[in-house]
Amino acid sequence: MHSTWQRLSNVSALATTVLLALLAAVAASSYVIPATLSPATLKVPHLNVVLGRPQYERRAKEREYAFVKFDLKADLTPLFNWNTKQLFVYMVADYSNTLYPENSVVVWDRIIRSPKYARLNVQDGKQKYEFKEITDTFSNTSATFSLQYHVQPWVGPLRRGEVVRTEPIAFPPVRRRTQ
Image (tube, rainbow, N blue to C red; front, side):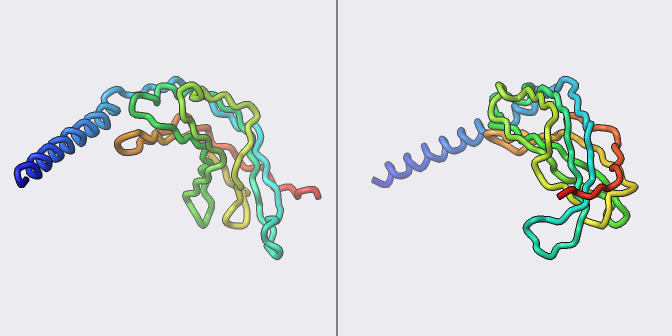
């Protein structure tokens, strides 16, 4: 009876070692073949700043909100391989102000689960998330917009990168929201 348990223990230890070695090889093989992305385009033809109050706070002071419309064309199929579970793709606005020199705001995102959907062609896309200024004003500030990604593998660490970045775009003067 003792030798049966010992054999079972030895077999399970060997199976675990082989499985871990196989998983490590799969994770390492994802880095051997680099993914080269074709050039992408990101344009922000409409950037507006509006003064308003959030609807969820009764006595909130007025703040500045930015509204973004964008055109995006990118082919992310090279990021998919045998170890890719899904891609998390997101557009970030990076800007600075006098109090906070580095600000990054995610304004749009998408989860891509298959290479079939990895060719992005978004025309006149709108932001998904609120883009409000943490200080008083966006004036005298510009932002760069970038498309970034996280590759979520079946096995191994996340990989991330940037697909495309715009030139700095100045925030326009604020206008009051019409009721």
